[in-house]
Image (cartoon, rainbow, N blue to C red; front, side):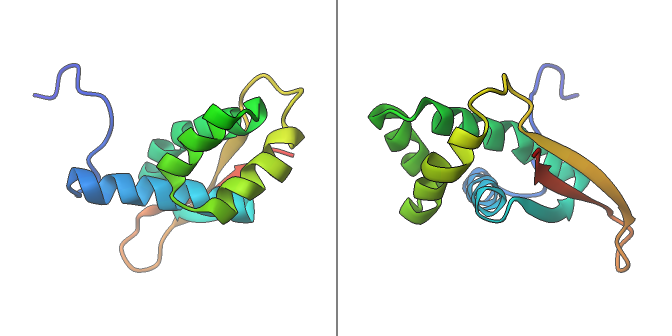
Length: 117
């Protein structure tokens, strides 16, 4: 039994899972909305919101933490220049999950993970 074990494995090893979360969070910051499965969206939402909180702080240490996690200077620049300042007056809850229905091929529940405007 998985008592007291936080997080989903999503059928991946730890390095693959970390890369998946970084790529999904980066895509959300870059595009504002991504279409993914419900399980992946629920797993990456707290990470993306933490990155936006770093973007709101705006200091050098926060920028270095974001670069270490997202591994893309272009996405981090957009996070600190556009996305972070957009949510300065909002105390959390920067993203939402909108259900779309099952996927055609395998009936996986699909959702939009999008930034709140």
